[in-house]
Every structure is written in structure tokens, then in C-alpha cells.
Length: 382
Image 1: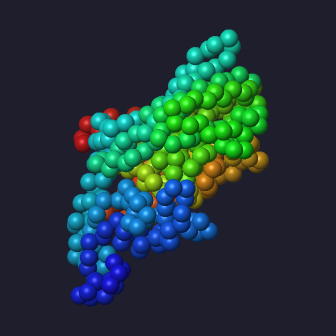
Image 2: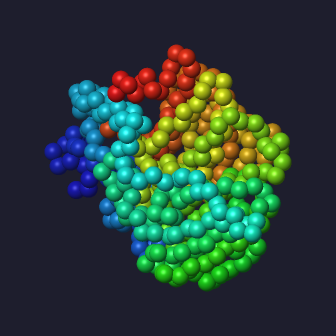
Image 3: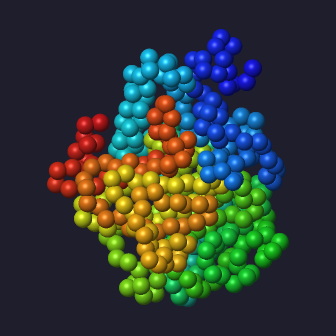
């Protein structure tokens, strides 16, 4: 008897909604395929709802906690429990704003030092115990001991140097995804360089030729290393600021999936950070998908204006409330923040964001403040 059935009543009998049962019912359990030294569940790559499951391959559950029940009649009789679990998730999310529910904070901007006019960063590649969601600690890998790695920010035309020290127990390399670099600096082992062996270092140096929202990540055993956290944002401002649309504040959101679960900037709901803006502001959101799955990100209540893809202008810009962010892509959009309140912001492949036990994974909120609504007032009630 498989976990899809129940000896007392067949496939619709009441049973706890385990992580595997939820992912199977969501249609995200696939066959196992070998990747490098291990196995990763097939992500059903031709199906945007596809994704890995936990059991036979060692891929952890996707930030899902055991929830209510699976049968419609049972769910109806336990509606209060379902409501309580949903509410508890939101309360925990708000508590996380006041005091982090998880250890570790990645995706922090790292200022360069200047050496003879060159902007220089030092990156270490580390084995990390990373708490993705409350109580969910995973064996991760991070740049400078964090997931994602530091935000690197520079301007078109800058000369940059990145010193990389490998503290892993295996080789690695760094690819500068979307950035135009000399061939020798592209970071692909046995194509443009030898891998950086354990304990060894490598220096990348190049002049920034193209602006945009770009990424850096491992390109060695990458299905494992990137999905365990070897990723980060490299933001390159245009030399002429007038060539980019105006905005008041910005946020970069890196999506990932598989080995650490569904995460935004290294955390899964309720440990994700809210996005806070003032009414009337124009908010720039830089989306980056470092995972192995497709994630259409949906904003409630208002539109996003898509202005760039992969660092190149989108002509003409277009409006949407569901922005498609395929693996490897970067999408820049601007939100005209007008209606105060908390607005849900989540992946619309719902098995990446919500189940009977409430929200998880790729979920956050956009909080728009004015004189009648302030996040601090809301938090005071939690």
C-alpha cells in the first residue's frame, strides 16, 4: 500500500498530511535522477509545477510542517484547526519582524576596499549549518558563511577584483552570471579555468562592461552547490543614472528551491522578511531565480511594471501582477505603492507557497505604510 491510500478507507481516507503526502498530492514527486555525487529528485523540468520531494533522494521537505488532513470531509470537520494553523503562521511571520525566528542572516551588502583604483572583495566558500525556517537546519554552503552570499555593488566601467578562498571539502568555482567578462574569468572548470581545490584560492579580475541586476554562483557540481546556497547578487549601476527609470527604494529577492527548500533570500516563510514601503513611493524589485524550478511571483492588490530582463531593457515595459521568473533569469520591476496595508506576495505555483497547514516557503508580504497604517503599530499587537 502506498502513502496515497489508507488500509481502512482507500485513497480518500483521513490521514495526517505528511510532507511527502502533500508534495505527492501537489504533483511534485518525480523520478530520481543522478546529479554529480548524489541524487536529486527530478523537478519535472518540462512541467512548471514540478519539483523534488524528500524521501528517497535525501532532498529535504520544502519548509512544510505536518498539517491538518487530506480528505474533504475531514477538512470540513477540522476547519477550526486549519484556521488556527494558518493564523499561527501569520503571527509567527510578524514575530519574525520583531525578533528573528531563525539564526543567520545572508544577502547583506559588502562594501569593497579600493586598491589602486580597483574595487576589491574577499569571498570565502564555506560549509554552513543554515536555519532556513524555525527548527529547520540544513547542511548548506555559503559565501562568507551566509546564504545568500554578500551583495556586491559597483558601477559600469569599474575595475573589480574578487579574491575567492575555498574552504569546502570539494572543489568549486565562481561564475559571474550575466556579466560580460573576459573568457578566462568566466568561472567554468575545465572550460575557462581549473577548479578551485579545497584549501586553494583564485582571483577574478575584470572591468564591468554591462549594467544590470546580475548574479554570481558556483559552476562546479552546481545542482548541489548552488542549491545549497552558493549564490549571491551582483548589482551594477549604469554609468549614466538617467538611463534607468527612477525609483525611491529597492529590494533584491533571490529565489531558490530543492536542497534547502523553497526560499527567498535564504529563508522560508515564516522566516522571510517583509518588504516595507511608504504610500506614494516607487519600489524597485530585482527578482533573481537561482533555483531549478519555475516561479511565477504574484503580488496582490496592484501591478508590477517590468522594465528589465537579465539587465536589458524591456521595450515597451509591461504591467502584470504575476511575474514569470524562470531559473537563471533576473527581472527588474517597479511597483507604484498606493494602497496601504499588508499585501500577500508569493509564488503562484501554490505547492511552493501554501497547504492545509498554512503558508510556507516562497511567501512574503508588501507592507505599504501611510498615516493610518504603520507596521510598528501592527507589531505592537503581536
